[in-house]
Image (cartoon, rainbow, N blue to C red):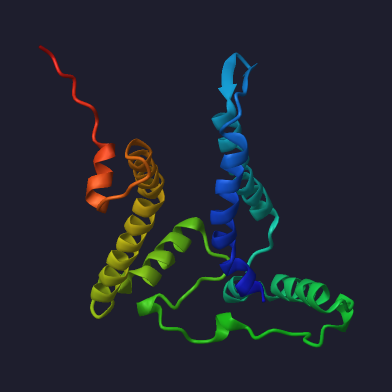
Length: 204
C-alpha cells in the first residue's frame, strides 16, 4: 500500500497544481514585504515550494537505513530502528519484537572488486572510494550500453512530458482564438496553429 501511495503522488500533483494556479494566478494581488513587491505568481511559487521545503526538513530527522547500519557493523542501532518500525506497524511494544540479534554482515566475505565491500566505521574518503567502486561497473560492459539506453529513454520521456505540459495550453488557446475569429468554425490543426505566429509590422 505504501508503494501504491508513493506512486500516486505525481498524479495527485498534476491535478492539484492546475487547480492551485487557477485559484491564485488570476488574483490581482500586490503587496510589499522586506523591500520587495510581490504578486499572485510569487504566492503561487511560494506555495509550490512548501512541500519540498517541508520534505527536506523531515528528511533530516529520518533514521538511517537498517540495511546500511548492518553493513557498516552498527547492528545495535539497526535493531533499534527495526523495533521502532515494528511498534509503528503493529501497535505492539518494542520489547515484544521477536528478533533479538542481527547477522554480523561485516564478517561475511564480499566481492570488493565489484563494490561489495563496505568498511565498518569508515571515513568520508573511504565512503567516496567505496561508493565509486559500487557505480564503476555501470561504465563497463555489459552494463554501459544498457545504462545509456535507459538514460536515452528517460530523456525522451521527460522531453515529451515537458513539451506537452508547456505547449498544450498555448495550442488550446490558439485553437480557441481561431474559432473566435472565424465564427466558431474549425480547420486543420496546422491552420489553426497559425494563430501562434507573431504579427509582422507592415510599414509603408
